Amino acid sequence: MDKKNLKIIILGAGISGLATAYWLNKEGYDLKILEAKGEPGGSMDSKEEDGFLIDYGPNSGLYTTPLIGQLVQELGIEDQLIYANEKGNKRYILRDGQLHALPTNPAAFLKTGLFSSKAKLRALMEPFIGRSEDGYYQSISDFVIRRLGREFLDYAINPFVSGVYAGDPDKLSVKSAFPKLYRLEEIYGGLFKGLIKGARERKKSKEVSKQTAKMFSFRKGMQALPAAIASSLNSRIHYNCKVDKIIKSDNGYDIMYTDMNENGQLSADIVLSAIPAYEAASIFGGGESEISIRLNSIYYPPVKVLYLGYKKEDVGRILDGFGFLIPAVEKRSFLGAIWSSVIFSDRSTDDFSVFTLYLGGARSPEIFDVDGKSLNKKVIGEFNAIMEIDKDPLIIKERMWTKAIPQYNIGHIENERFFEGFENKNPGIFLSGNYRGGIAVGDCIKNSQLTSIRIDEYIKTLNR
Image 1 (cartoon, rainbow, N blue to C red):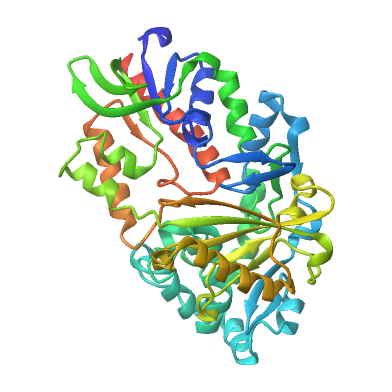
Image 2 (image 1 turned 45 degrees about the vertical axis):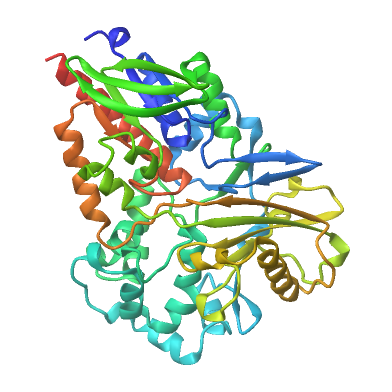
């Protein structure tokens, strides 16, 4: 089949859908993107308000794959790319009401007050702990307690999981949610051994570990990347177009959609779904079909983003890091805070310090049962105490994500296997997005290229 005669429809103009479209477009394929919102980006949502730049979604990315640099260069946005201030390298964890810097080397680990002497001795036993059974059915909590001890889980991994997934380590599958972490044990026999030996593999693949990767963003926020890809694709994107249903036909697939309250229909040879799982559930099969049940089973917890701005002189604590995370055992009303104006200095006016706080997540979704204003007041009070601030914020902005980040909970592998089988039984359908293959920006970009390769290989089979 000629590339120009193939009809490829992509659902969703988030980073996964747009990046896949970019790679396919480079190969000469004709395609159309259907996006329910009026702008590109999906969860990448950057807004400029009164001299302040707010990222309501991902605040930054990690430069873990050379594909990021390739995209930036080919899109001609090198001048927009910025790297985080080196001050942002320091991360803090709250313990007993005090902020402790997370140790990043053996000497700092031995000196830190974040862990007790008993916990440090227990962690040093890690190289002598044997391998576990199948990690797909093992929680991160079980994995970490076995290898490093309970205190390490409580004051390192629990807050870390909240910072990445807004997740619950008792429920997340270690092998599905953190495959590279589990691989250190699976391949090398332990975490410390794997960190040393795995570095050689990453060097060969030109990939960088998330622990050492540079943190990046753009002068106009993270949404600048999907916006640039969308601009390169120009008229191929159909905005304000909600897909209602996809039906298999004799010649491919019929796509039923609503565009500005008017119904329409498109035909396609190939359909790539890059929308959230819960949205795809109503499009593929619908009702009680197994594909819908599987897609709906992926949990997206609620998360509120609370953006606060203070006069610099009103902040008592020295701002010398990325921010801080709060372990569940500390029993606070929010998950942590990013010191936004420290990481990227152009995010606010010179006389303000701004912070981004995160509330809820899988760890405490019930927190939203109370009145929103009362909750904000409680969170701001707790934040002010930690940061040595005795005045109310002069700027308060918020965004509620009722379904935020997909959780790779125990048993997620069963969904993955089903999705692969569904694609095999429905040739021309491809399921993508951050509920498959990783939630980070770098993961989505890497998987977008892999998806484009899968589509290209499938098309080649049609020509044999």
